[in-house]
Image (cartoon, rainbow over all chains, first blue to last red; front, side, top):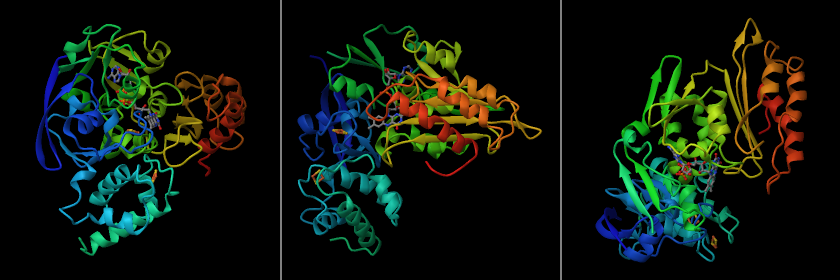
Length: 161
Length: 266
Ligand SMILES: Cc1cc2nc3c(=O)[nH]c(=O)nc-3n(C[C@H](O)[C@H](O)[C@H](O)COP(=O)(O)OP(=O)(O)OC[C@H]3O[C@@H](n4cnc5c(N)ncnc54)[C@H](O)[C@@H]3O)c2cc1C
Ligand code: FES
Ligand code: FES
């Protein structure tokens, strides 16, 4: 089968792969690149666990044509921690019990990261809106919202690790 | 096996595909269908021509490229009147991907943005330069396999344009129904209005009986009575998991009244 060469940056690193025609970005990240942090939930845009950032904006990788990513800058949950130092969102998710089974967590955190990059001091409503495309079947959402608001506080006050 | 053809010039796309070819907008519907093997597609056509992203103000009308996403509508200073409509589509990630072009083809109950374009006398422009009014386009949607390059709409005067979407979950619910209206007034009376509904048929539809009942009426509780009576008989809405057709007909006058009188409640 003919493959198409594709180059992008993934979490700051130049990445070059060959992809099948029509492949979606989630499959390419997981199966070709080996970044298993974005998850497969529904494959049709409803769950949000495959959310990645494309040039800083959240996109659903299961619905993104991989070939359209040429030259773009991608971020996944894998790129958040610096060595053993977790990103404030990862830490507040743990501290607030915002992850139970954890399946929604990669998408939740990436959606939240995009929000906080644009709006460091969001209201609760703005947090809810930012994760409105992400489904969680375990937590009832409240701990997730609290974790994002707490991360915002910590990021504003400069607590990094 | 699927091949992807990327065109840098939209004009070259016209006639470049058959029934096994799909044009890629943002992919929010198409990629889901491909992931589930629901489409007999062997070729995807991608267009990177900047014309697909253009927003051009031309006097009393404004042209919006078919590749413009809902997030780009929200950010555009020229499309402030359409920002609440774009904001009502999906969640943030969907809005970053979902295009105007794809919205024209979205099956009910989707197509909220198209409802607004319909109330604004939308005109669809194809890659070969030909044009079609949006109502005609929707009536024959799918028959013509051609790239839509843009849609132009009439620019509403201040406070002339209204939009509401009725959902069961917020934010990011699918439409129980959506309504858009352009209500020009002359000497205190509504003059030549447009009213369009989403999720009340297989495509977004103009409410012609409502429009004629409103034409020449005062925009107050008495003036709109005939329009409210007309709306329940205007459509044969579908049953789906959100609402029955009967329910949609029952609530249509309630939400039409709220939209017309600028009342609160969804
Ligand atoms: C979770 C979820 C929530 C959603 N919520 C909403 C909502 O609230 N409201 C709503 O209206 N929709 C909603 N949608 C549906 C969809 O996201 C939007 O309608 C969107 O605008 C479709 O655009 P797209 O660019 O992604 O289309 P695509 O998936 O790229 O294309 C859809 C169809 O249109 C054709 N097409 C695309 N562009 C062109 C063109 N320029 N010329 C000719 N043909 C073209 C494609 O070939 C395909 O057949 C939702 C979808 C999901 C998955
Ligand atoms: S796997 Fe992409 S939205 Fe569910
Ligand atoms: S923690 Fe299990 S789905 Fe969210």
